[in-house]
Image (cartoon, rainbow, N blue to C red):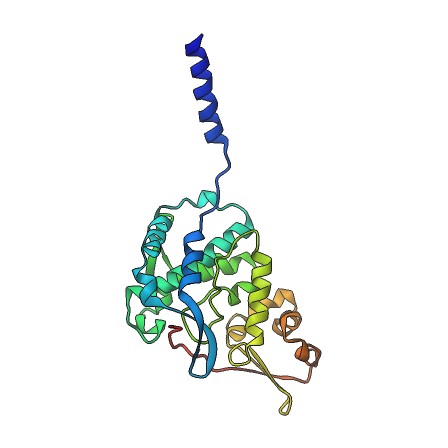
Length: 255
């Protein structure tokens, strides 16, 4: 009788463990690192959120995070929101890793060469596969049809959107992406600037490079208008505006 009872109890525990839903990768460590090592700074006259790369690389949480990503199973990342949050976090982690693996550098682009740009160089292992920043951005994230990724992934450079001082989560993703877009466009030094005198709208070069990603949403300007500073929204609806793009500063976003 006791044997049967123990057997049933053990079987019940096993079934409970097997049938429990898998949880998406835990980025709480990355969240803590961001809160610890990201702060405001002005570089070359541009206001931005910068990263303390030296201290990040020395932190045992960072080293554990990289190791955990290597053995992570993508079967835990199932919904669209989970996939977006997962790969945006991974991109930002791997961009920082690329810098740290080659530190010190003045620009992440210095890591590349004429024959192979930095984006196409192996940067780390995620879920047992060697990845590149190019693969994460173009083969995974862009194919999910979410234009706001372009203000969420950060290529460790001054003119990039600011690195958010918190990890992206599936639950809060829409709010986080809306906030990223609003904040980026509010930064007239690298996001959006309206020159009324010359009837010219200056945008980040990001919106030129990835123009096609906004086409299904009505085009770049139409998509950006609701996120633009309130004082400029009405003017953005004018078809008479000339569109120009700001120079891109590839200098390292280092604190």
